[in-house]
Image (cartoon, rainbow, N blue to C red; front, side):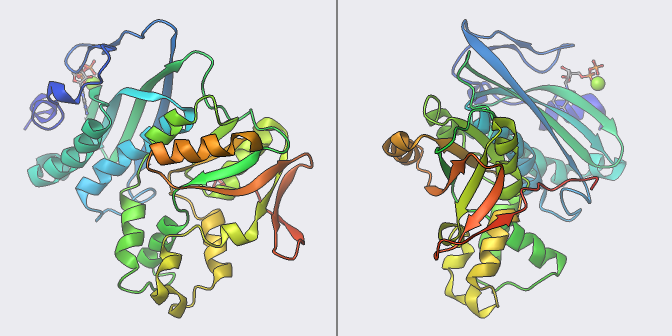
Amino acid sequence: MGEFELIERFFKQPAKAQPPSRTVALGIGDDCALLQPESGMQIAISSDMLVEGRHFFPEVAPASLGHKALAVNLSDLAAMGAEPLGFTLALALPAERARDEQWLEAFSGGLLALAETHRCPLIGGDTTAGPLNLCITVFGQLPAGQALRRDGARVNDDIWVSGTLGDARLALGALRGEWGLPADVLPLARQRLERPTPRLALGLGLRGIASACADVSDGLAGDLGHILKASAVGACLDAAAAAHLTAAGACPSLAGASFDSDALRRIALTGGDDYELVFTAPASARAAVLSAGARADTLVTRIGRIEVSPGLRLMEADGRSAPLAARAFDHFA
Ligand code: ADP
Ligand code: MG
């Protein structure tokens, strides 16, 4: 199978996957795709690369890999409050994978199913032989001036997170052999690691409500740290709230596996690969945040407050607070 047949067979999508707007004027097949932004809209663009051995295990199910490659990119659009328009896929495939029709079918199946769910068609890309490497660039739109940027957090704003945090890190540790997980917890945690849910509906619903927003890809402390730095503020998180952020923590079997609330709190705060949103909003917007969460069918939890004093702190139930390193995962550190 040649390069062109491969694209034709596995990556061309039916028209029903197109966004409702007429923004994609031309998709796969020409030298460029063409986007026609609606008037008054800005185009949001983000790229994420997934490298075998670094971002995923070689034996990961191809359908999950396809899902995750797009999900992590859609998560960036969500964090900006943008609505998806389309994406490109630059793909390096080892020769044996390019011959493996089952693998290709499952990979493109996982990828294009999520694309269809979010009306975000594949509009172009590049295909080459090489070590397995996936780079997706996603395009979205939002009304000019309404992006949820990282630099808008203000002193006394509440800090919120969506969904649950830390479960992907629990699964990663189990797969790497760092610890064991009970049989009823592993599948749940693994689902979070391998098939993250981009919070697009919530991101859209937070336009005009959130003062700053980022997605949690490298751990809450680190990604909130980016907001703090961009906004030139500090923050204090509530330790009690942070101890209940993992979904796995609700499984009684986990306590027996020597994960106490301290350990779960640490994993929730620093884990990574969650693809949830961390955002700030004025206290006067609490009801609006909760109703945006309800409309998006997404749990939102208030976990702390923005402060003048720089840095990130964790406050215990007795009122004492201790510094928390606001450091994100760094590939070269
Ligand atoms: P070029 O010669 O300009 O690199 P190609 O021959 O690689 O163009 O690609 C032909 C068409 O197929 C283009 O429209 C390109 O966007 C599309 N395409 C190539 N690889 C992929 C891919 N992995 N996914 C989606 N579209 C692709
Ligand atoms: Mg090419």
